[in-house]
Amino acid sequence: MSALRGLWPEVQDTCTSLGLMLSIVLSVALARGVLRQQMHRPVAHAFVLEFLATFQLCCCTHELQLLSEQEPAHPTWALTLIYFFSLVHGLTLVGTSSNPCGVMMQMMLGGMTPEIGAMRLLAQLTGALCSRYCIGALWSLGLTRYHVSERGFACRNPIQVDLPKAVIIEAICSFIFHSALLHFQEVRTKLRIHLLAALITFLVYAGGSLTGAVFNPALALSLHFKCFDEAFLRFFIVYWLAPSLGILLMILMFSFFIPWLYNEHTTNKKE
Image (cartoon, rainbow, N blue to C red; front, side, top):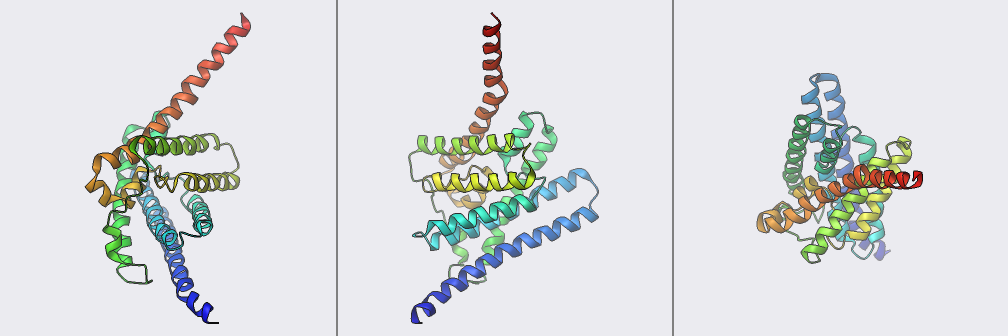
């Protein structure tokens, strides 16, 4: 009985954190619904949708990171939450990418004009920065024992390997995720969301202890803004350039190298 009483505060804090994340998701869903009814200008509509999507993703990830740090000996719980909230984001943030690399991929493949791409990038960066200060304000309320406002403004360096290895890890994660995103488009929506959530969970499991496996520049800016301030070049290379390099390599491979290889093979067979 005493053991159960000792566990109760932790259970209560966990439930409060989960409730906070679900409240953010519901608030963003409500805002998206109102926006759909009231805003009829396509560019402004797309900007606000991208802002809200990035805001939701970053806020929930801040809270997920906090929860995972409280149970480092039980990573399964954290991975379960990552999978669950990846599903939630996939279901509720349809039509947005919440990731500058996703916008870059669409622009390079010709699916988005540079003007729309720049507008979406601005919305994502604005949402990422706003989420950081919003979550700091929520933590200052002290809803749980772990909610401390100062925590959100401290640099917690997630890079546990040297710079070349960190660049390779983030580039590979970005390459794999966006390759799947590109090739899962023909898969049924419900199945695609589960597949992408499982892939995100696997990538976090594989690279989370090394670099955090963020592969999202906007999310990295929100999570590690103070670290960007203290070691800008290192964090810029790992969390901005490396994922962009992964996108570039992915497009070169699937749009140029593999078609060229196929044409060469076909030509040789004819000869």
